[in-house]
Image (cartoon, rainbow, N blue to C red; front, side, top):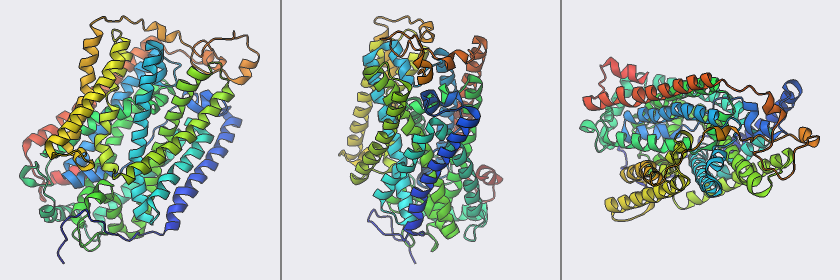
Length: 611
């Protein structure tokens, strides 16, 4: 039977699992984690005196740090779209930025050791207008990243279980909100660790299952399947049109989009700073370096194997969409991964991807929800509404923030779905809105000359520049501005690059009109930790003082890191960031791009690259 040519017409693919399984995982598993966090919180309070009724523990977890995971669907999407180069560039674009943040987080921790969010640093240096401006940019970043994750996860869960996509959209945040309410950032650390461990196990099992399945059987057979699928998957700009080459023009375009947009997604995400502030430099640097380099292997290996399998198996009767190709909507919703899992492992594969998707997106949601909650609590309520807020009041507003953002994120995701926006579209364009504040924020931490006017104006001028370039490019290429045209690779690349780098020009020009000379020691004079109700009840703290003037017994007992150690770890972090960029983005892939090399079945290089 011949394959039907790709179409965007809807075509129902039967769900491999019943709806009860979907509701069981999305609702029951979330509730189970919530009750688990309640029990664990009680144990930690009794044995280690870690009390989540204290805001410093709820929001900053007594300054201890764990690793966390992120969604996995799009690494398969880009391999399906661009060939074997897609997954490599996905891993390289993530690892470079994660390791770089180890440097940025260490610098920030050294400059303002008691901060909870990076926005507090903005307020201390530049005042209210800049603080509110960057608060807006940070919330936009967190909201877009959350929408991107829920869009992909809800589409995958809807296919796997038959749940209505709106049910999964609104129920996914439910369990996350519950266990985040109970456990705070400690819950995000613990679930990150548990989920990451489980995802690694399931990813290894799935990739091994694909290679050893009856339909594939070996790397050589996978190569043959991809070559056979070549006529149905012509990628403009690939060397000789091959899917098995690193010489991919579209792949390079995507790599630029991902690298630049990830700077926005990471640097403007206060959740990353929460975790950097929660640990010592001796933990932050190794954690982000090892985490970033290790993370590279996950999208690279999973995306390469499963993405190539989706290309090759699509023409076989075992593939869920047979006898047609996947529609554009299915591809951009990230359904390549669940389709391949069902094709090679049946219901077992469906369960594996369901668990992977659920654990990855809930881990991300937990961090995003708590990040926005910390903004609403520390950067809005405690600064502009109640500077004398007690520990109990701050915790209460932290809980309100958790619930509020969970509901808002689900509502915006539903709106995006109904206007025709999917995971692929948000993946490509989110950097246009998340990148403008990156360089002004970095300059706030490392460049004493940047002025308040430069920080504020460069961010919004950069956003206007990025939006103008994006929409103008979309119209120039398609003669129309629609969801489809604005989701194109080139418009998104031009817009994202403009959003990230134009503020560099704006900030420097405005700054040198009348440069500042900020004294870094002023950061360390600030007292930002919240006093517990027990200690405040008998204190002689004068009334009328703002949050910067409150000191705590806990903060007095914390060790101040030696300046020499701080400098040493900062240098380590910077060198590792440079080395990771050169290794993952320059010295390894670019020579392969220039070589115009196609992986052959006989070449051992294919097996080495794939395995």
